Image (tube, rainbow, N blue to C red; front, side, top):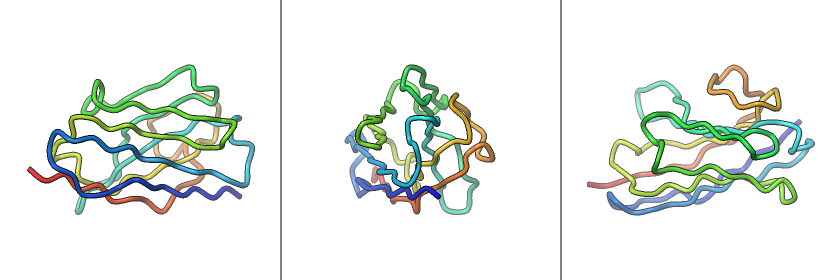
Length: 124
């Protein structure tokens, strides 16, 4: 079993930055890819970013590429999402997740464990 706890969400203005963190426990963290997803009210959960098990490969959705950066520290069992130039449309609950495999994926069903989410609200 894996436990994931996100933190770092909050209320910011458009153009501001936030850094989300995800702390993992209960599994060999470095064996699996990790990802961030988000869900806005009334919408499906969307892929945001993913990072391979060793951190050497990353992948982003078109909507955040160039503004968000995903990273991980396997020694500390943590992952982060640095979000810059935030827009009102980035408002959502953000979830971190641990994949079933080593390689990156954007498919939610290929993630085995999920955190409880952290709210990000961007005002215009």
